[in-house]
Length: 365
Image (cartoon, rainbow, N blue to C red; front, side, top):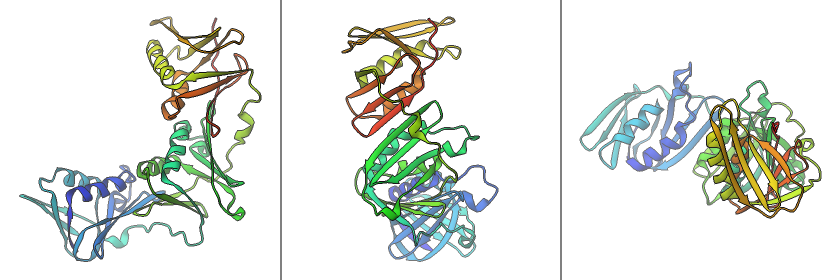
């Protein structure tokens, strides 16, 4: 195998696929990237047996072939190469010779036939949507995925395809983020899947602001086809809890808040929090919101924000990190906080498609 490629294209392709590679694998081949050289292009692929990515990049191929090379080490070498042009040749023993300007490296690889093939999606249900739209939906929900491995069905995002609507939900039991997106698909394609965290992180890295992505759903697997990149992942098996029942009913107060100023206020006030006291109090009174953090062992912070509020005086406490998470990931200028009382969950809404439920914390008066 012999090819020439620009350093920038080589590094970019390696960086897109290398994150899947596990650092703690017992199979040496899983630390490697598969490289196949064909007509005018290279194919790169990596897998950890749960998630796999493949991508193509243009190159001048003098001699076709395939090998696997240590992914992270190869990326590190390419990043440091001195010239813009890289020449690579691989012999029959899978030893790669990499040359760039005055530098040359010899890197030991493994035979390509040991590399586990990525799944095929021949009879899959397909859903097409804009990359930008999917990226935004994932950004608005993924921070609420549970990291508690004992509740493994929550270690991913639920994607529910019903009535020409894609609903995406993530929850860790203390908060829930949900976004809805209109999407046309045949009734026969309806169903629910749970995409695991690692695949969510990887697809967010690959998605751009232009072009389409095709979701392919097959038995126990999901694929994302972005044209020059393809990601395949196992799905989480099991039933996602009924998320609709945790969304509170009619609220008593609907308070409009400016997202960015509120986020900055919360960030400042929560500087005074400690491990022992990790809640901020929101005290609502006529046309005023006072945000308070109090740690007996550290001190106290207060900040007032002018708002339009005509309801009864109310104090509700939230985990500041959980309250700031949706504010960081939304782009709208305003959000609406819906409250029933001081002990019921609060709901943040943005537009008609996004909803975030947050459990309150106990208020010590």
